[in-house]
Amino acid sequence: MIVANRLPVDRVKLPDGTLGWRKSPGGLVTALEPVMRSNQGAWVGWPGTAGEEADPFVDDGLSLVPIAMSEQEVREFYEGFSNGTLWPLYHDVVAKPEFHREWWDSYVTVNRRFANRAAEVASEGATVWIQDYQLQLVPQMLRDLRPDLRIGFFLHIPFPPGELFQQLPWRRQILEGLLGADLVGFQLNGAAQNFVRLVRQRVGHKTHRDTVYLPDGRTVQATAFPISIDTNGFEELARSQSVAERATQIRAALGNPKRVLLGIDRLDYTKGIYPRLRAYSELVKDGHFDVNDSVFVQVATPSRERVEQYRVLRDDIDRLVGRINGDLGRIGKPVISYMHSSFPRHEMAALYRAADIMVVTPFRDGMNLVAKEYVACRFDNDGALVLSEFAGAANEMRQAWLINPYDINGMKATILEAAQSDDKERSRRMKAMRKTVIDNDVAKWANKFLESLTQLRPNHTKPVRPARLS
Ligand code: GDG
Image (cartoon, rainbow, N blue to C red; front, side):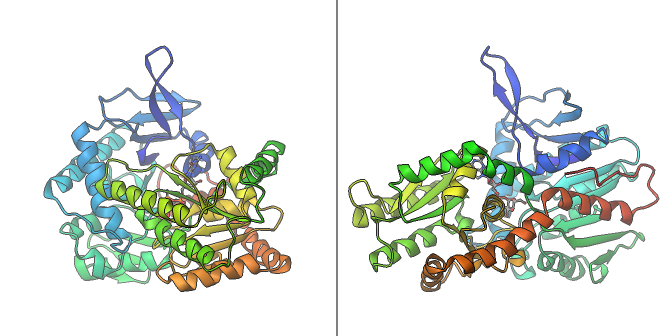
């Protein structure tokens, strides 16, 4: 059973006016669907809009169990505590986290609802895999209700060092919530170590390396499982005739420039969109790039638009792009071609194929799948990836042109170096990165996590059968 904030389907209004469901496929769903179907799996989650509780239903062999949230809970649990408190706190405090007691109360209430529902529907001895920062209390709540379950948890975002985590008024409750799991997974080793250290210091449990020893004799393992993408799926798409044609069209629409640089991100202050555009605009201003033969395409997917910090960010980026294009653009030749919208996967693959340089510059990012998707789409072994050393992906893709997003001059020099690199150099780097994403796709990630969880509690009644993915 998967317990995640979002169901893999959205509640939508159908053409006949009634409410129905539409699939919202993402990497996680692609990876987990096969293993879920072959194990009569269930997925517990929120359908994405405030409203009444809908009945569980079966979609193509997978049971979906919707959890209701009121308008107020969406504001306090989701936009408030999850995205206004935890998100900035866990991302190096790049924005100021807000602490409100009523947001916390709502976080507890909603986590309890998820736990209660999961406890009702899980079969005897089932394996339950809880996802991400919105549900950190669910492991312990669920264990209290159903000690027979095997419980795993995976955190998709970074886990901060003690110095930052300590700010959280409810730090102990969060640690104790996570300790309800048998296995707590993180993107990176450093995050797992932060967690174990905090448990030792704040909760006082004995720890050794990646294991926590609880007073009741139970142990909890904290391990890194770097997430990945559906590599084959992306490569196949990128190889298709229609994506190749679309990539050519995109370049033609841009005026067939010599160089296309690309950024694709959710419009989020952690992604470092501002310094990246500044760095590029200064390179244009300094004469290193010419608007007549270079363009920076920035796609910013709308995100969390009701949260104040995201509105401010949108205005900041709008203003910056306007200023750069106003100062340095020519008729029909913008410096930055900016789109605040989301695109189908097919269009994303075409953009990846059309881009000579992919620029990924987060201040802090759990992994960053966009970087891996770009590499998966470059079966021609061409294209340069400029990547922040603060993205989890930099741990695995050392061959990228690595940058520090706080160092604008350093970033300018590295973007320029990537732009001036020769074919041989680009191909050497791309081949090495491609090997990494081909050898480690999201199916392997899910398998590894589930295998580790199974091995940790071998006496359980119903072992999962992994290794049927991909
Ligand atoms: C969190 C962590 C971690 C984006 N725009 C469009 C679109 N996307 C897709 C991308 C990619 C995904 O969304 C974004 O994933 P990222 O990893 O880049 O970033 P977050 O959303 O912040 O994800 C992150 C991840 O969880 C997984 O654990 O890597 O660190 O922050 O797949 O392709 N997809 C489509 N249209 C768009 O306009 N179709």
